[in-house]
Length: 346
Ligand SMILES: [Fe+2]
Ligand SMILES: [Fe+2]
Image (tube, rainbow, N blue to C red; front, side, top):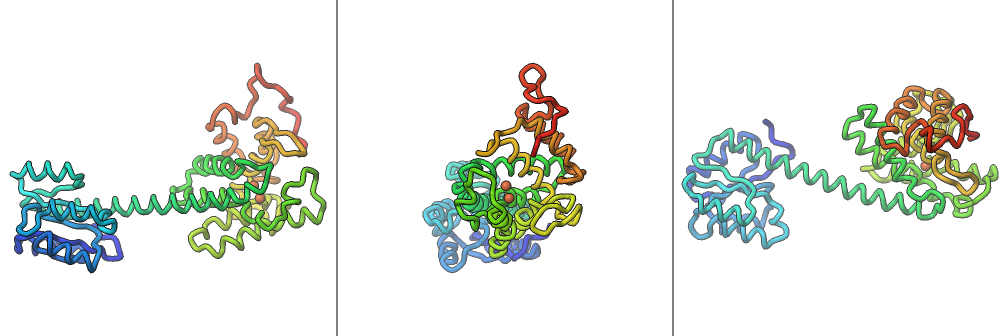
């Protein structure tokens, strides 16, 4: 297995010089940068000038043992995150117990098997990388939510809109079998899709009556304005197609670019369905909420006009998986507010 790049630094702490060099050479062959120390104290001196990605340490050493070194690492916020693997003699159960009590993650038993050594080191570093990515991803999502909520806070009538649109969009994307990395970008895109509304004045955004054509023109600027905002944020580039194209329509009657059919990026075609579904199933000051089955009918009727005809049927099927609230058909006993044959007057 190849080591991840850029080259990782491993600090090997071991008083037996022969053992130390042998471990170092195995790791170097795997493209790791290895720094060596003969005891805990020497290791601490090295840590003053560099921070390794992982420490492999013997337990029994003169001057400062592996356990003492581990305790010192835990006192320093910069070092506490470094994973430590102990190298221990097979007949040292007490040492292992002491290490376990301190929360040491891994042990390798001497004599050390080369394949074991590499497997444990690689797995540990991979795990650290995964945790980092997850934490960064969560931090991004928090930032995105703050941005999205800023917009929603101004718009009195769309409370919870972005969160629900994200749910519907994810539901459709999962039904389409999208890969995890695309689903991750979708979370950002769905939450930010209306970020451009920041340029729309409050009196237009919160107007209870129908918009004038001038007001409508201002409102229609929001996809372009949103895309412009996101272009300045490198890690949110993937969200741009969601923001820019969510008001395009399959038949070319949408905005801002009046794109048609598959000229509209898939992100826009997908989000358009989720966005309209939520808009119509929630109340606006000028009209009540429509029941989900009726809106699903609307989606079906407009497949090939407003919506991508390939995505619409997948959405109809996928949305029902979210629970009875979203079911396409009214329950004959409890609903039936409107006959299925009647179209919504959107
Ligand atoms: Fe929008
Ligand atoms: Fe929206």
